[in-house]
Image (cartoon, rainbow, N blue to C red; front, side, top):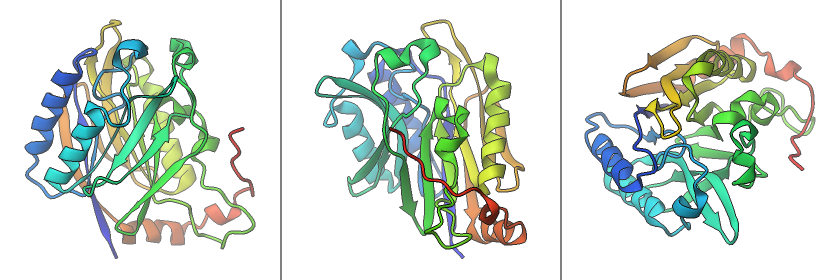
Length: 268
């Protein structure tokens, strides 16, 4: 049975300072002493969660993507997190799944946070990204997506073989405010239980330029809803190895997914 090692980086971010954030994160990644397959950064890791798209949006051949390619190659890791990307006239809160060979996948945040007017500055994504590494399938989502369970739900279409879930790990990268941390922790546990998968939520700490506080509460949860790791308030780098055997055992012992409703996700 294959294992998968994942490192989460919970950190403060320099407000709208790409150079400082990339330098800080490079130091943290380079300091890793344990072998890891995937390193997960927060949402908008190079800027903080901001609507300043005119000044901070980058093309796909910009500095942040080039930095991700270099970090992934030099450290032999899959590197993921979201950044502000501009294509033509549209801006996206885009998660990048960067491989050491320079190839990458991308996911544009589907659910834009209207409460902060994110929907006025960014374009919503239209499709999910489920990546694959070492025989594990990983569903990649961003922050506010967490509040919408259908978007993360393991589909159970009639065309599929029973008990063949779409993915094994669900990752959320976030800038989730401290005052709603109870919702963050509760919903992450719910996503793990209802989808019978590992869930990883990586949030930031500190205070941003809008005086919004972030308490971190990065968390890793197993397919039965048990918390394997949780860190609040402090910067932290944590590495964990997930075992496929334990995932399969949980699904075999409690084969709940096969009883789910048949549906397909259509974002249009």
